[in-house]
Amino acid sequence: MELSLFHFFLLAIASFRLTRLIVYDKITERIRAPFFDEIVELDEQGNEEIYLIPKSSGFRHFMGELLNCHWCTGIWSASILFVSFELFPTLSSPIIFILSIAGIGAIIETVVQILVNE
Image (cartoon, rainbow, N blue to C red; front, top):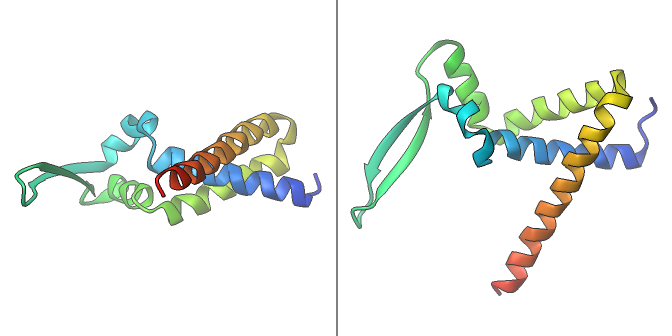
């Protein structure tokens, strides 16, 4: 399938949303958990701060490092979406459209929150 500017835009927004989903969203927290250790520290006010540190070695360390970096995960997300779009356009298009719509919604919500808080 030929990659038009429209499809490029959809893939870019879908990659953004998939990356956020994998790295930051609460819904994927359980998927990320096996690759991190939790470190609890107290801040100056005595409140607990929880830090996620990638596991110390092996495959879990590699995955923890990957999931700890949105730039790294973004490359893999973009690659997976692009390859699936090229090889299986009928199957991957609905997923790409849904991720793109959700990504644009997230961007709009962020802009609205910035404008409201000014």
